[in-house]
Length: 133
Image (cartoon, rainbow, N blue to C red; front, side, top):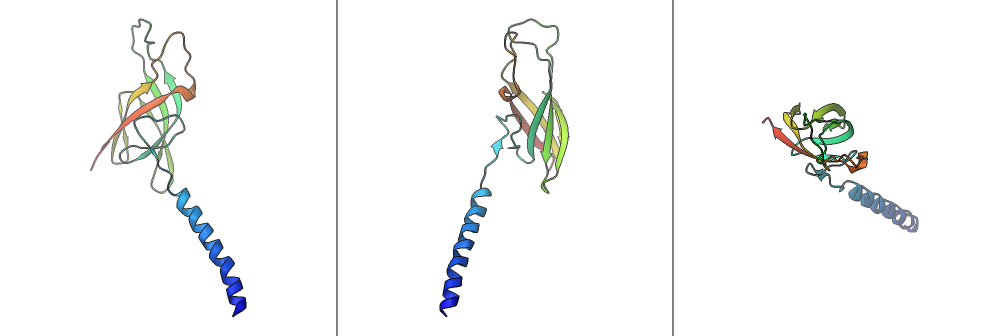
């Protein structure tokens, strides 16, 4: 009987320790799609998305005159329910089909300026998802 008690106590402690680890790691919240940095996963009212790289930022700087407004293209990942990461590309102001609807890159911050070079970590994106169902 004493052997069972001696064996049971360490097993209970191990089980409690493992359950505590499982609970804390599963509780990490995702950012919403209104202020997303490169490399950050976000919940976009349905799909989970992640901007990976700015492919093009040819926006007209705020302190310049331009003939063309320019555009922003971003390489993205759609993290599907099974964990699969599906790459796609999105362009500022254009709808892109994804999941059961479409997603739009609504804004890119900060504004471009002639005297400031934006680094990848400076970018913030806002997305809107329009579900199909």
